[in-house]
Length: 259
Figure 1 (cartoon, rainbow, N blue to C red):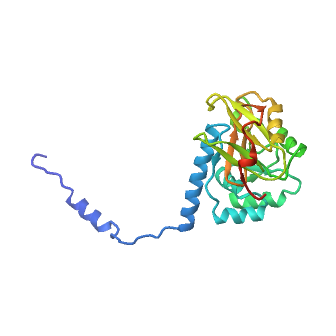
Figure 2 (cartoon, one colour):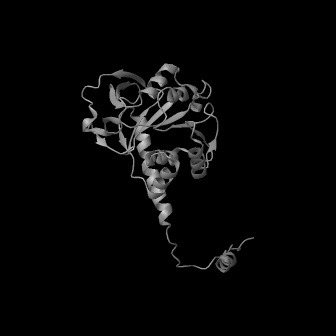
């Protein structure tokens, strides 16, 4: 074999002959798909921030036209539709609380492709602003808490609020107030909270029912409180949440919105 010099000339020539022709075609971007991707990314970031800092009020991105249209058809707020877009997909399950929620449930299922299951089995529960008092508390009591082996099966509840006030990540007072339901202030402590955090909401029916469950961590449920003015505040299962004085958290200065 002495004197033999391997060559790739033939292979290279064949590769040139079979390679696709170069093209200068520029594919146009899909503006609708871009808008959806951008707003979902921003909403997911806001939700992560809110869950990582319990009791802190975070702002969601403005709802695109598609979310506003879906909200009008479903009877939910645009902000709830945004959270549904972020959290629900074909691999998850959900239910909407309320005796007259069938149309809303079907509309969200078509939009998100998520499975519809009984309240006791779902990963995500939506409690609309019209479901209040004992009806809301009953839904909270029925939500699954997961098990020690599978704590991730604990449900996440998306709860529509008329009033939601607190401080943002910069320590500035923010939130909104609408309707005539009485607000209750809550003090949160635990992982993610620097000392303690305070927020106020008109959904004491849900928060109190959550506390009454007395779930043992890591089991339990997570609350995502959302208003109609683009604010979200989370109470994860790891947080202690006790009622406190409303002093210093008066809702008169909060932004108003039409329910």
